[in-house]
Image (cartoon, rainbow, N blue to C red):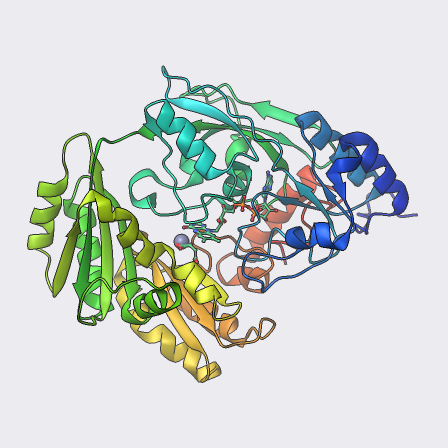
Length: 463
Ligand code: FAD
Ligand code: MLT
Ligand code: ZN
C-alpha cells in the first residue's frame, strides 16, 4: 500500500476492471481481442506500435466519467484516442494502457446563426464538422489532410494547426468553451460561448495542446468563420526554397485574402507524382514550389494574379481553374501518404524564426546526412507560419540519432521542436530544448493538480 500523498504508478487493467468497464459501456464497447484492438494500438505512420488490454468506447459523457473514475480508483492508465491520426506516438498505448476511444461522441449541435458558433462532440470528424458548417452557410477555420478521420477532441488535444493557420489560426483560436472529464471522473463544463467572459482562469485553453494528459475532452464550443464564395489557387515554381520562402513572406504581407501558402520541393513533388500516379504540374523540374490560396466574398483572383505578377524569382506559375483545385492540393497534401509508402518516417514538425527559415531548409539535409548518410530528408510545410515538416526515411524506427541532431539544430536556430503535432512520446526526451526547468516544473504542477494519480496518458509529453 502506498503512503498517503505518494503517487501510485498506473498499472495494466486486471480482469475485475474489465468486467466493471463492460458494465459501464456495454459488452460490445469493450474490445479485447487482438484483431479488434490492433488498429487502436498502432499509430498512423506505423512507427509506434503498442498493446492494450482493452479499447473502451463510451457513448456518453456520463460513461466517460464512470470509466475514468473506475480507472483512477484502480490506478489503471488510460490513453484517450480520437481518430488516431496523431503523428507523435501520443494516441497509442505504448505502455499497455487502456485505450479510451471517444469516436462515439459524435453529436453535432445546431449552428448558432446569431453568434456563428457550434457545439461538437469530441468524436466528430473534421470532415463532418466542415459539412455541417457548410450546410449552415459557414465554414470551420482549421483544415487538415487527415480530415476524414481526425476528430474535434484530438484536434483540441494537439492544438492542430493545418492549412489555413495563416488566416484563422489553429484550434486554440477556434475554441470558445469545453466540456471535459478530469481523471477522477469529475465533469467540468463551460460551453456558453460568450464572446467576452473574464470569469477567472480559461481552463479550456489549458487543454489545447495538452495531448490527453490533463483531462478528456468530450464536447467543444467552436467559432465558425465565413464561408467565402470566391476562391483562387495558384502553384508557383521557383529555382530554390530561398526564393519560395521570400515569396511566401511577401504574399503574406500583401495579399489580404491569403488563406494558404504551402511549400514543397522538387524531390517531394517527384515522389508524390511517382508514388501516387499523378501527372507532373510543369513539364520542367524546378527547385521549390509554393501553393498559394486566396478566398473572399469577392473574386480574389485579380489580387492574386497581381501579387504573382510582382513575385520575385518566379520561374513558372499555374493559376488553377476551380476544376483543378483538388489536383493542385494533392501535390502538397499527399506528401504525408507518399512518404509513408517508403516506410515509417521520423516526422519532425518544427517552426523556425522567419529570418532563419530559408537557411534552415538549405542546411538541415546536411545535418541529417552527418548522422545518417543513408537517410533521405523530405521537406514541406506551412511556410507562411514558419512551419517546416522535416521527414526522414531510411532510418530504423527506434534509432533516434536523426531526431536528436535535427531537434538540437532547430533549438540552436531559435525554433520550436513542435509546430503543430505536439510532443507525444516521439519528442519527449527533447522537451528541455524549448522549455526551461521552471516551465516543466509548472507543467508538472498543473498535471498533478488535475490528474494526481497520473493515469491520463502517462507516457506522453512530460519527461
Ligand atoms: P489522435 O491521434 O487520436 O490523438 C492525438 C492526441 O490527442 C493524443 O495524445 C491523444 O491522447 C489525444 N486525444 C485524442 N482525443 C482526445 C480527447 N477527446 N480528449 C483528450 N485527449 C485526446 N496536424 C496538424 O496540426 N496539421 C496538419 O496539417 C496535419 N495534417 C495531417 C495530415 C495527415 C495525412 C495525417 C495523418 C495527420 C495530420 N496531422 C496534422 C496530424 C493529426 O491529424 C492531428 O494531430 C489531429 O489533431 C489528431 O486528431 P485525432 O482525432 O486523430 O487525434
Ligand atoms: C501536413 O502538413 O501535411 C501535416 O502536418 C502532416 C505531415 O506532417 O505529414
Ligand atoms: Zn502540417
